[in-house]
View 1 (cartoon, rainbow, N blue to C red):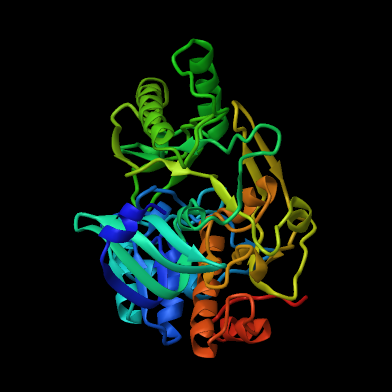
View 2: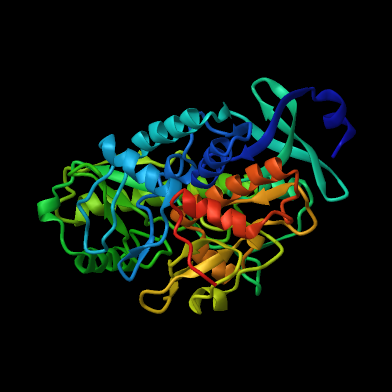
Length: 430
């Protein structure tokens, strides 16, 4: 940390638990901590909460059922229930059995949950630096329209999605696949409205037309297919189809290039749909994500590193604080193709609490996408339902640290698991 930051930034924010990042992980972490009685402050870079579910326009929620069992509930289920009650959830599934949600109503739901729990909010604010001493995170530096500020807390939770706080604090981390350091591609989500759904061809026919357009040189997107989902509105289709490769989600220069490339791809795909695909002749581009979706960036090195063998072997852990059942799903970091490896039918794996604990730190937890996992395992744990469950565990653990005056690695894991179950979490047994 530079002396300039330290000397110029006033101490203006204090909390028992400070959560950085207001996506599904950070929201659930902050709500859980506040509900457990901790004075909780949530820092968010945008003017609204929801992270990839809102700013990224990522939709729908990926797998949280396996073998007919719902394995992620708790605060995540509360989000679904509130979306449904507000008209922001659809039960109109496609053949992939995915329920869509409305991102604008998600913003309202997230805000209501935070405020009702007593979470203090600071929006339009980012973490830019951190000060540490002997494994203890002393304070962080925030920046906003107000200038630079110093923020202090007893327990910090990094839910930035990219491990920004952990990296600033000096936590060791990895990025990308082992052979070349490349991370999974980025995707800018977009939506088309005015679609005549009754005339839409089956997926395989749309993909055949897409292949023809690529062969003709009309599309140079490296993605191998057109991935679309229904939304909460009839006549509107959601697309997860752009693919930006060889870019680093922690680099401003690469993010800039990725946004520009993704919008160029959106333009190509929109032209293709309106000109070549039945049902889209009168359709129009209705929305793109506020920011490009980043699948993978930093992965912190924690007290345990989750592996592909753990995921595919449906491994259970004594300190499991959340469960996952999503495939290992790796979009080619360097081009075309996607590798899918499935868990055994009806099975799930545990995520150990140790994956949330950065090595060598006493008062810092990481929640959401950057938890401790290999490149392959990360491709399963990165989805929003798992992020929400991990966030709830992190927030509950942080509040327990406050109540017990304990460090993050010394809390009673059995008591943490019991508390999560009391709040509706679905935890398996070792």
